[in-house]
Image 1 (cartoon, helix red, strand yellow):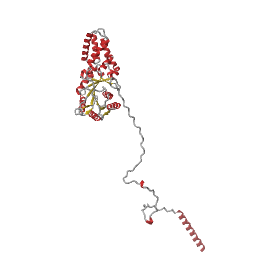
Image 2 (tube, one colour; image 1 turned 90 degrees about the vertical axis):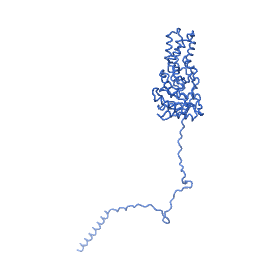
Image 3 (cartoon, rainbow, N blue to C red; image 1 turned 90 degrees about the horizontal axis):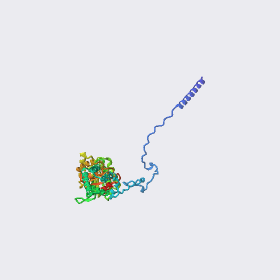
Image 4 (tube, one colour; image 1 turned 45 degrees about the vertical axis):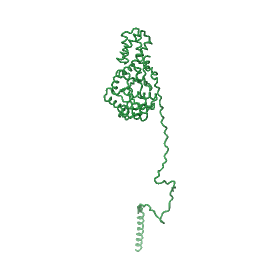
Length: 402
């Protein structure tokens, strides 16, 4: 019995040890304690101080003074080659320019000069022939009154002359045409710097006016070349503010010969631009100020009144020396109507006839002078830069007669 109890006790002890071993092998590992944030180390002194650490040291030269500017070395800027300076053009001298351009009058010469010489050379000058002579003159836009005057004088002189050799007829016709055009008329352009009434020196002021499409801006640019060729210094005023390209076009003309262009905002006040141009001309000591005005229909009262305003504003600096009316020679009698209206708004001092090389109406020179009582001072004989020539009656008539 005691042996049985002892075996039972030993069995219980073995079973308990085995269970403890099983429980021990299944127990989970404990989790690590949470990490607490470490406060930044505070500076310490004495024995608690940390050992010194190696730090980069700066010399006195490296330390900048308080408030001293910090010099930052910038990389060198890339080198940009300078823009090429446009070479100034040298305009042709104006002396004898019309003679050199004589061939440009070939169409007028054929219809007017040769036509008249052919009719006058007929063996019998009857009424029908004289009527043909009148028709030739009227077709060339000489005008009714000048035509009648010329025919009457030719009939009288031919009857007195008797013989009519070609040379005699040519000389006769030349004399009568020169008498109609006028050789004693003052055709000089007042473009020289002069002294004003208050004793100050001021440039000559030239206004260029006319209807749309006559070539005012181009004529103004060519006139600048004429003046530069004669030794004048020029300032251009782009008072045509209604047409966007007008100021650019005029500036291009000026840059070719070294003339500065004064311009304003698009659709700005043209009178203000003209005023500023004259002001700049006075400040720079220029010889001439050319003011290009906007083209306007002669039937538009408001635009014509504005042109008068431009002239009045410019005259605050002093009187306008020249008012040049640009007419298209191909418009014929309509050009005379335009001329009459413009002369009523601004006092015209001279006529510029353009496109005279492309028309058979060379007689417009006579008609427009008779209509306005002012001389033709310049004529345009082509689209070239130097195809604007001072009007010379003798050279013109010789070109017509061939």
